Length: 115
Image (tube, rainbow, N blue to C red; front, side, top):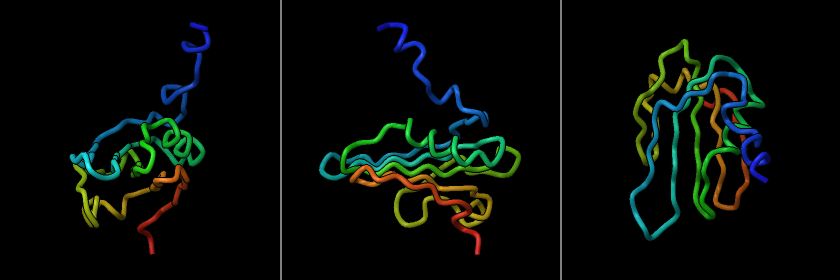
């Protein structure tokens, strides 16, 4: 049993050198939990981005959102709750957004701010 826990795959096993650079969570106790992360990665590892999102904490009826950026490009170090979570200049550098909604449905959107 201990061997299964120790050898369980996780974020450290993903290729792409993922690193969390910003995190914000709503601070209230009456509604759904909202968690947002900014994460840098070494390339366009789409499958690994989805796997990374699946490994992150999620609360039933809450939302988990992860913004992915290339480590070699400018990226945000802060996030904001509300409509605009990342600043306008940083939106153009966003590779993907992973989102898991309140019903546990997950999706990864590539280049979400590109026109």
